[in-house]
Length: 416
Ligand code: LLP
Image 1 (cartoon, rainbow, N blue to C red):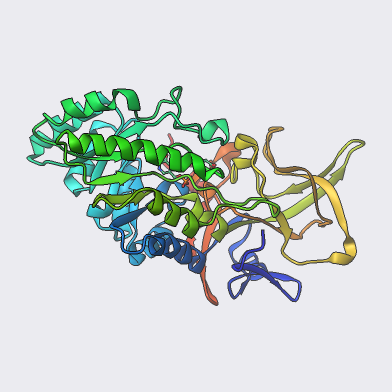
Image 2 (cartoon, rainbow, N blue to C red; image 1 turned 90 degrees about the vertical axis):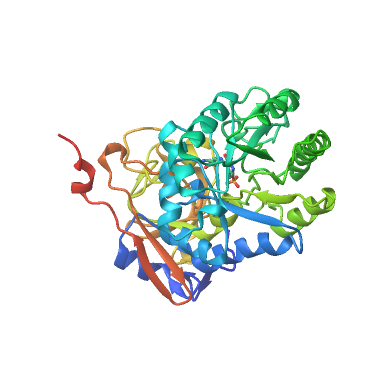
Protein backbone atom coordinates (compact mmCIF):
# COMPACT_ATOMS: atom_id res chain seq x y z
CA UNK A 1 0.00 0.00 0.00
CA UNK A 2 1.25 3.40 -0.88
CA UNK A 3 -1.71 5.69 -0.83
CA UNK A 4 -1.72 9.42 -1.38
CA UNK A 5 -1.22 9.71 2.35
CA UNK A 6 2.00 7.69 2.57
CA UNK A 7 4.50 8.52 -0.16
CA UNK A 8 8.23 8.30 -0.73
CA UNK A 9 10.09 11.55 -1.21
CA UNK A 10 13.75 11.26 -2.07
CA UNK A 11 13.69 7.70 -0.83
CA UNK A 12 12.16 8.51 2.55
CA UNK A 13 8.60 7.56 3.53
CA UNK A 14 6.30 10.40 4.54
CA UNK A 15 2.90 10.63 6.16
CA UNK A 16 1.36 13.76 4.64
CA UNK A 17 4.20 16.31 4.97
CA UNK A 18 6.06 14.59 7.79
CA UNK A 19 8.99 12.17 7.47
CA UNK A 20 8.26 8.98 9.40
CA UNK A 21 11.95 8.86 10.30
CA UNK A 22 11.54 12.05 12.23
CA UNK A 23 8.52 10.75 14.14
CA UNK A 24 10.30 7.51 15.05
CA UNK A 25 13.37 9.35 16.30
CA UNK A 26 11.33 11.61 18.57
CA UNK A 27 8.43 9.37 19.61
CA UNK A 28 10.34 6.07 19.66
CA UNK A 29 9.28 2.68 18.35
CA UNK A 30 7.07 0.77 18.12
CA UNK A 31 4.63 3.56 17.43
CA UNK A 32 1.35 4.03 15.57
CA UNK A 33 0.99 6.96 13.18
CA UNK A 34 -2.34 8.21 11.78
CA UNK A 35 -3.12 10.79 9.12
CA UNK A 36 -5.88 13.19 10.20
CA UNK A 37 -6.46 14.25 6.59
CA UNK A 38 -6.98 10.68 5.41
CA UNK A 39 -9.50 10.02 8.19
CA UNK A 40 -11.44 13.20 7.45
CA UNK A 41 -11.51 12.45 3.73
CA UNK A 42 -12.81 8.94 4.25
CA UNK A 43 -15.57 10.10 6.55
CA UNK A 44 -16.53 12.83 4.08
CA UNK A 45 -16.59 10.33 1.22
CA UNK A 46 -19.16 8.28 3.13
CA UNK A 47 -21.29 11.23 4.09
CA UNK A 48 -21.18 12.96 0.69
CA UNK A 49 -22.15 9.83 -1.21
CA UNK A 50 -25.61 9.86 0.39
CA UNK A 51 -26.45 13.06 -1.46
CA UNK A 52 -29.76 14.40 -0.19
CA UNK A 53 -30.74 11.15 1.56
CA UNK A 54 -31.48 11.35 5.30
CA UNK A 55 -28.54 9.57 6.89
CA UNK A 56 -26.17 9.27 9.80
CA UNK A 57 -22.69 7.82 9.35
CA UNK A 58 -21.75 6.37 12.72
CA UNK A 59 -18.04 5.66 12.95
CA UNK A 60 -17.46 2.30 14.68
CA UNK A 61 -15.32 3.37 17.61
CA UNK A 62 -13.85 -0.11 18.16
CA UNK A 63 -11.69 0.26 15.04
CA UNK A 64 -9.60 3.06 16.54
CA UNK A 65 -10.75 4.77 19.70
CA UNK A 66 -8.01 7.31 20.29
CA UNK A 67 -9.60 10.48 21.70
CA UNK A 68 -7.98 12.70 19.08
CA UNK A 69 -9.28 10.50 16.27
CA UNK A 70 -12.77 10.62 17.80
CA UNK A 71 -12.53 14.36 18.27
CA UNK A 72 -11.70 15.04 14.65
CA UNK A 73 -14.59 12.85 13.52
CA UNK A 74 -16.92 14.60 15.98
CA UNK A 75 -15.81 17.91 14.42
CA UNK A 76 -16.77 16.50 11.03
CA UNK A 77 -20.26 15.84 12.37
CA UNK A 78 -19.94 12.05 12.48
CA UNK A 79 -22.15 9.86 14.59
CA UNK A 80 -20.62 7.04 16.58
CA UNK A 81 -21.33 3.34 16.96
CA UNK A 82 -20.26 2.14 20.40
CA UNK A 83 -20.28 -1.25 22.09
CA UNK A 84 -19.38 -0.53 25.71
CA UNK A 85 -19.59 1.99 28.51
CA UNK A 86 -15.90 2.63 27.93
CA UNK A 87 -16.54 3.63 24.33
CA UNK A 88 -19.42 5.85 25.45
CA UNK A 89 -17.11 7.57 27.91
CA UNK A 90 -14.58 8.11 25.15
CA UNK A 91 -16.97 9.61 22.60
CA UNK A 92 -18.48 11.96 25.16
CA UNK A 93 -14.99 12.98 26.31
CA UNK A 94 -14.15 13.69 22.67
CA UNK A 95 -17.08 16.09 22.41
CA UNK A 96 -19.56 13.91 20.51
CA UNK A 97 -23.26 14.63 20.78
CA UNK A 98 -24.99 11.77 22.60
CA UNK A 99 -27.94 12.02 20.23
CA UNK A 100 -25.62 10.86 17.43
CA UNK A 101 -24.46 7.76 19.27
CA UNK A 102 -25.86 4.28 18.65
CA UNK A 103 -25.23 1.73 21.35
CA UNK A 104 -24.59 -1.73 19.83
CA UNK A 105 -23.29 -4.91 21.46
CA UNK A 106 -24.63 -8.34 22.35
CA UNK A 107 -23.96 -8.17 26.07
CA UNK A 108 -24.67 -4.72 27.49
CA UNK A 109 -24.60 -4.71 31.28
CA UNK A 110 -27.17 -3.00 33.49
CA UNK A 111 -24.59 -0.30 34.32
CA UNK A 112 -23.86 0.30 30.64
CA UNK A 113 -27.54 0.60 29.76
CA UNK A 114 -28.04 3.04 32.65
CA UNK A 115 -25.08 5.08 31.40
CA UNK A 116 -26.52 5.12 27.88
CA UNK A 117 -29.93 6.17 29.16
CA UNK A 118 -28.51 8.92 31.38
CA UNK A 119 -26.41 10.23 28.48
CA UNK A 120 -29.34 10.20 26.06
CA UNK A 121 -27.89 8.06 23.29
CA UNK A 122 -29.74 8.19 19.98
CA UNK A 123 -30.65 4.50 19.90
CA UNK A 124 -29.94 1.15 21.52
CA UNK A 125 -29.28 -1.59 18.99
CA UNK A 126 -30.84 -4.37 20.97
CA UNK A 127 -29.65 -7.94 20.36
CA UNK A 128 -31.99 -10.10 22.42
CA UNK A 129 -35.43 -10.20 23.99
CA UNK A 130 -33.91 -10.24 27.50
CA UNK A 131 -31.99 -7.08 26.71
CA UNK A 132 -35.16 -5.31 25.59
CA UNK A 133 -36.90 -6.25 28.83
CA UNK A 134 -33.98 -4.84 30.82
CA UNK A 135 -33.79 -1.60 28.80
CA UNK A 136 -37.53 -1.10 29.28
CA UNK A 137 -37.36 -1.58 33.04
CA UNK A 138 -34.29 0.62 33.51
CA UNK A 139 -35.85 3.32 31.31
CA UNK A 140 -39.00 3.22 33.45
CA UNK A 141 -36.94 3.81 36.58
CA UNK A 142 -35.27 6.85 35.01
CA UNK A 143 -38.47 8.14 33.47
CA UNK A 144 -37.02 7.86 29.95
CA UNK A 145 -38.28 6.42 26.70
CA UNK A 146 -35.25 5.55 24.56
CA UNK A 147 -35.31 4.67 20.90
CA UNK A 148 -34.58 1.05 20.23
CA UNK A 149 -33.72 -0.95 17.11
CA UNK A 150 -33.34 -4.70 16.97
CA UNK A 151 -30.23 -6.02 15.38
CA UNK A 152 -31.58 -8.57 12.97
CA UNK A 153 -29.50 -11.49 11.81
CA UNK A 154 -30.37 -11.76 8.09
CA UNK A 155 -28.57 -15.08 7.55
CA UNK A 156 -26.24 -13.79 4.86
CA UNK A 157 -22.70 -15.14 4.66
CA UNK A 158 -20.33 -12.19 4.36
CA UNK A 159 -17.61 -14.40 2.83
CA UNK A 160 -14.91 -13.10 5.12
CA UNK A 161 -12.62 -14.59 7.77
CA UNK A 162 -14.64 -16.85 10.07
CA UNK A 163 -13.76 -14.80 13.18
CA UNK A 164 -15.34 -11.67 11.76
CA UNK A 165 -18.38 -13.08 9.99
CA UNK A 166 -21.45 -12.25 12.07
CA UNK A 167 -24.56 -12.51 9.92
CA UNK A 168 -25.34 -16.21 9.65
CA UNK A 169 -27.58 -18.43 11.71
CA UNK A 170 -24.70 -19.91 13.71
CA UNK A 171 -23.51 -16.52 15.00
CA UNK A 172 -24.39 -15.11 18.42
CA UNK A 173 -25.44 -11.76 16.99
CA UNK A 174 -28.90 -10.25 16.69
CA UNK A 175 -32.30 -11.88 16.50
CA UNK A 176 -33.21 -14.34 13.80
CA UNK A 177 -34.88 -12.64 10.84
CA UNK A 178 -37.59 -15.30 10.70
CA UNK A 179 -38.58 -14.53 14.29
CA UNK A 180 -38.27 -10.78 13.88
CA UNK A 181 -41.91 -10.00 12.98
CA UNK A 182 -43.14 -11.68 16.11
CA UNK A 183 -40.49 -10.04 18.29
CA UNK A 184 -41.27 -6.56 16.92
CA UNK A 185 -45.00 -7.06 17.41
CA UNK A 186 -44.47 -7.96 21.07
CA UNK A 187 -41.83 -5.26 21.60
CA UNK A 188 -44.16 -2.57 20.25
CA UNK A 189 -46.37 -3.15 23.30
CA UNK A 190 -43.68 -2.02 25.73
CA UNK A 191 -44.36 1.32 27.40
CA UNK A 192 -40.87 2.64 28.07
CA UNK A 193 -39.09 2.10 24.77
CA UNK A 194 -39.85 3.40 21.33
CA UNK A 195 -39.14 0.56 18.90
CA UNK A 196 -38.33 2.45 15.74
CA UNK A 197 -35.30 0.97 13.99
CA UNK A 198 -34.00 -2.13 12.26
CA UNK A 199 -30.29 -2.81 12.22
CA UNK A 200 -27.92 -5.45 10.90
CA UNK A 201 -24.20 -6.05 10.52
CA UNK A 202 -23.04 -9.17 8.73
CA UNK A 203 -19.29 -8.96 9.25
CA UNK A 204 -16.10 -7.09 8.57
CA UNK A 205 -13.47 -6.86 5.82
CA UNK A 206 -16.10 -7.65 3.18
CA UNK A 207 -15.11 -7.50 -0.46
CA UNK A 208 -18.26 -8.96 -1.98
CA UNK A 209 -20.59 -5.98 -1.59
CA UNK A 210 -23.42 -8.01 -3.16
CA UNK A 211 -23.62 -9.73 0.22
CA UNK A 212 -24.08 -6.40 1.95
CA UNK A 213 -26.76 -5.38 -0.55
CA UNK A 214 -28.49 -8.70 -0.02
CA UNK A 215 -28.57 -8.21 3.76
CA UNK A 216 -29.77 -4.63 3.25
CA UNK A 217 -32.57 -5.79 0.98
CA UNK A 218 -33.72 -8.35 3.54
CA UNK A 219 -33.85 -5.91 6.44
CA UNK A 220 -35.42 -3.21 4.25
CA UNK A 221 -38.18 -5.66 3.30
CA UNK A 222 -38.67 -6.44 6.98
CA UNK A 223 -38.89 -2.72 7.77
CA UNK A 224 -41.57 -2.26 5.09
CA UNK A 225 -43.62 -5.11 6.54
CA UNK A 226 -43.29 -3.72 10.03
CA UNK A 227 -44.41 -0.30 8.85
CA UNK A 228 -47.39 -1.84 7.08
CA UNK A 229 -48.29 -3.53 10.34
CA UNK A 230 -48.32 -0.17 12.12
CA UNK A 231 -44.86 -0.11 13.73
CA UNK A 232 -43.32 3.28 12.98
CA UNK A 233 -39.85 2.30 11.73
CA UNK A 234 -37.86 5.52 11.31
CA UNK A 235 -34.41 4.27 10.41
CA UNK A 236 -32.46 1.40 8.93
CA UNK A 237 -28.95 0.81 10.27
CA UNK A 238 -26.94 -1.33 7.85
CA UNK A 239 -23.83 -1.71 9.97
CA UNK A 240 -20.22 -1.53 8.82
CA UNK A 241 -18.04 -4.07 7.13
CA UNK A 242 -16.64 -2.60 3.92
CA UNK A 243 -13.23 -4.15 3.23
CA UNK A 244 -9.94 -2.40 2.59
CA UNK A 245 -6.95 -3.47 0.46
CA UNK A 246 -4.17 -4.85 2.62
CA UNK A 247 -2.17 -6.09 -0.33
CA UNK A 248 -1.05 -3.95 -3.24
CA UNK A 249 -2.66 -6.37 -5.65
CA UNK A 250 -6.13 -6.16 -4.05
CA UNK A 251 -8.85 -3.84 -5.26
CA UNK A 252 -11.08 -2.79 -2.36
CA UNK A 253 -14.66 -1.67 -2.99
CA UNK A 254 -14.81 2.13 -3.27
CA UNK A 255 -16.76 3.91 -0.54
CA UNK A 256 -18.68 6.31 -2.82
CA UNK A 257 -19.71 3.64 -5.29
CA UNK A 258 -20.83 1.36 -2.47
CA UNK A 259 -22.99 3.99 -0.78
CA UNK A 260 -24.47 5.21 -4.06
CA UNK A 261 -25.41 1.68 -5.06
CA UNK A 262 -26.93 1.09 -1.64
CA UNK A 263 -29.07 4.20 -2.03
CA UNK A 264 -30.07 3.13 -5.53
CA UNK A 265 -31.19 -0.29 -4.32
CA UNK A 266 -33.12 1.09 -1.35
CA UNK A 267 -35.60 3.55 -2.83
CA UNK A 268 -36.12 6.59 -0.63
CA UNK A 269 -39.27 5.97 1.37
CA UNK A 270 -38.49 8.55 4.03
CA UNK A 271 -36.64 6.10 6.28
CA UNK A 272 -33.25 7.44 7.38
CA UNK A 273 -30.24 5.31 6.57
CA UNK A 274 -27.41 4.67 8.98
CA UNK A 275 -24.04 3.00 8.51
CA UNK A 276 -21.42 1.95 11.04
CA UNK A 277 -18.11 1.91 9.14
CA UNK A 278 -14.92 1.47 11.15
CA UNK A 279 -12.08 -0.12 9.21
CA UNK A 280 -12.79 1.65 5.91
CA UNK A 281 -12.45 5.05 7.62
CA UNK A 282 -9.21 4.52 9.53
CA UNK A 283 -7.28 1.48 8.25
CA UNK A 284 -5.45 3.18 5.35
CA UNK A 285 -4.77 6.24 7.48
CA UNK A 286 -2.39 4.41 9.79
CA UNK A 287 0.95 2.63 9.91
CA UNK A 288 2.89 1.06 12.73
CA UNK A 289 6.58 1.94 12.86
CA UNK A 290 9.02 -0.65 14.10
CA UNK A 291 12.80 -0.96 14.14
CA UNK A 292 14.81 -4.00 13.15
CA UNK A 293 16.71 -5.33 16.17
CA UNK A 294 18.50 -8.34 14.74
CA UNK A 295 18.66 -10.62 11.76
CA UNK A 296 19.02 -14.33 12.11
CA UNK A 297 19.49 -16.92 9.42
CA UNK A 298 18.78 -20.55 10.18
CA UNK A 299 19.20 -23.42 7.76
CA UNK A 300 15.54 -23.13 6.80
CA UNK A 301 14.50 -19.54 7.51
CA UNK A 302 15.62 -15.95 7.57
CA UNK A 303 14.22 -13.95 10.48
CA UNK A 304 14.00 -10.20 10.92
CA UNK A 305 13.54 -9.63 14.63
CA UNK A 306 11.85 -6.27 15.17
CA UNK A 307 10.81 -4.29 18.24
CA UNK A 308 7.06 -4.70 17.58
CA UNK A 309 5.20 -7.93 18.21
CA UNK A 310 1.84 -9.65 18.31
CA UNK A 311 1.22 -7.64 21.49
CA UNK A 312 1.14 -4.43 19.44
CA UNK A 313 -0.44 -5.87 16.27
CA UNK A 314 -2.26 -9.15 16.68
CA UNK A 315 -4.02 -9.21 13.30
CA UNK A 316 -1.45 -11.37 11.44
CA UNK A 317 -1.75 -14.30 13.83
CA UNK A 318 -5.41 -13.84 14.79
CA UNK A 319 -6.89 -13.46 11.29
CA UNK A 320 -4.00 -14.61 9.09
CA UNK A 321 -3.98 -10.98 8.01
CA UNK A 322 -1.49 -9.57 5.52
CA UNK A 323 0.02 -6.15 6.25
CA UNK A 324 2.50 -4.74 3.76
CA UNK A 325 5.87 -3.91 5.31
CA UNK A 326 7.85 -1.10 3.74
CA UNK A 327 11.28 0.32 4.50
CA UNK A 328 11.06 3.87 5.83
CA UNK A 329 14.27 4.62 3.93
CA UNK A 330 14.57 2.98 0.55
CA UNK A 331 17.85 1.26 -0.31
CA UNK A 332 17.18 -0.39 -3.66
CA UNK A 333 20.85 -1.29 -4.12
CA UNK A 334 20.48 -3.80 -1.28
CA UNK A 335 17.81 -5.77 -3.12
CA UNK A 336 15.12 -7.85 -1.44
CA UNK A 337 15.01 -10.89 0.82
CA UNK A 338 12.39 -13.44 1.81
CA UNK A 339 12.00 -13.33 5.58
CA UNK A 340 9.74 -13.84 8.57
CA UNK A 341 9.25 -10.57 10.41
CA UNK A 342 8.95 -11.55 14.05
CA UNK A 343 8.85 -9.81 17.42
CA UNK A 344 10.35 -10.39 20.87
CA UNK A 345 7.32 -12.21 22.32
CA UNK A 346 7.75 -15.81 23.42
CA UNK A 347 5.31 -17.45 21.03
CA UNK A 348 5.71 -18.85 17.55
CA UNK A 349 2.53 -16.98 16.70
CA UNK A 350 4.46 -13.77 17.21
CA UNK A 351 4.95 -12.70 13.64
CA UNK A 352 4.03 -9.67 11.55
CA UNK A 353 4.74 -11.46 8.26
CA UNK A 354 5.88 -14.90 7.17
CA UNK A 355 7.91 -15.85 4.12
CA UNK A 356 7.61 -12.30 2.89
CA UNK A 357 9.60 -10.86 0.02
CA UNK A 358 10.61 -7.51 1.37
CA UNK A 359 13.33 -4.89 1.51
CA UNK A 360 16.69 -6.24 2.64
CA UNK A 361 16.56 -4.31 5.92
CA UNK A 362 19.41 -4.24 8.43
CA UNK A 363 19.48 -3.83 12.20
CA UNK A 364 18.39 -0.32 13.28
CA UNK A 365 16.47 0.19 10.02
CA UNK A 366 12.92 1.40 10.37
CA UNK A 367 9.96 -0.44 8.86
CA UNK A 368 6.40 0.74 8.34
CA UNK A 369 3.72 -1.89 8.82
CA UNK A 370 0.96 -0.59 6.57
CA UNK A 371 -2.82 -0.31 6.80
CA UNK A 372 -2.61 -0.49 10.58
CA UNK A 373 -4.99 2.34 11.48
CA UNK A 374 -7.90 -0.03 12.21
CA UNK A 375 -7.91 -2.78 14.84
CA UNK A 376 -4.24 -2.16 15.51
CA UNK A 377 -3.54 -0.24 18.70
CA UNK A 378 -7.03 -0.99 20.05
CA UNK A 379 -6.23 -4.69 20.10
CA UNK A 380 -2.78 -4.21 21.66
CA UNK A 381 -2.11 -5.90 24.98
CA UNK A 382 0.53 -5.81 27.68
CA UNK A 383 1.47 -9.45 27.07
CA UNK A 384 5.05 -10.20 28.13
CA UNK A 385 4.76 -6.98 30.19
CA UNK A 386 5.26 -4.82 27.15
CA UNK A 387 4.15 -1.20 27.60
CA UNK A 388 1.68 -0.30 24.87
CA UNK A 389 3.14 1.90 22.12
CA UNK A 390 2.74 5.62 21.50
CA UNK A 391 0.19 6.95 19.00
CA UNK A 392 0.87 9.96 16.79
CA UNK A 393 -1.51 12.07 14.72
CA UNK A 394 -0.22 13.90 11.64
CA UNK A 395 -2.00 16.76 9.94
CA UNK A 396 -0.20 18.51 7.09
CA UNK A 397 3.29 19.29 8.32
CA UNK A 398 2.32 19.11 12.00
CA UNK A 399 2.32 16.08 14.22
CA UNK A 400 1.79 15.33 17.87
CA UNK A 401 1.74 12.42 20.24
CA UNK A 402 -1.91 11.67 20.96
CA UNK A 403 -1.19 8.83 23.33
CA UNK A 404 2.00 8.53 25.27
CA UNK A 405 3.91 5.32 25.27
CA UNK A 406 3.10 3.42 28.45
CA UNK A 407 5.78 3.14 31.10
CA UNK A 408 6.71 0.19 33.27
CA UNK A 409 4.95 1.98 36.13
CA UNK A 410 1.75 1.94 34.05
CA UNK A 411 2.14 -1.82 33.80
CA UNK A 412 1.81 -2.40 37.54
CA UNK A 413 -0.65 0.39 38.35
CA UNK A 414 -3.50 -1.02 40.40
CA UNK A 415 -1.68 -4.21 41.29
CA UNK A 416 -0.91 -5.34 44.84
N1 LLP B 1 -20.93 -2.39 13.59
C1 LLP B 1 -20.86 -3.50 14.36
C2 LLP B 1 -22.05 -3.91 15.09
C3 LLP B 1 -19.68 -4.24 14.43
O1 LLP B 1 -19.63 -5.35 15.16
C4 LLP B 1 -18.53 -3.81 13.70
C5 LLP B 1 -17.27 -4.55 13.75
C6 LLP B 1 -18.64 -2.62 12.94
C7 LLP B 1 -19.85 -1.96 12.90
C8 LLP B 1 -17.51 -2.07 12.14
O2 LLP B 1 -17.12 -2.91 11.10
P1 LLP B 1 -15.99 -2.44 10.07
O3 LLP B 1 -16.56 -1.33 9.22
O4 LLP B 1 -14.82 -1.98 10.86
O5 LLP B 1 -15.70 -3.67 9.29
N2 LLP B 1 -10.77 -7.07 14.89
C9 LLP B 1 -11.17 -7.49 13.57
C10 LLP B 1 -12.45 -6.78 13.14
C11 LLP B 1 -13.60 -6.98 14.09
C12 LLP B 1 -14.86 -6.27 13.65
C13 LLP B 1 -15.89 -6.32 14.70
N3 LLP B 1 -17.10 -5.61 14.44
C14 LLP B 1 -10.01 -7.24 12.60
O6 LLP B 1 -8.95 -6.79 13.01
O7 LLP B 1 -10.13 -7.56 11.41
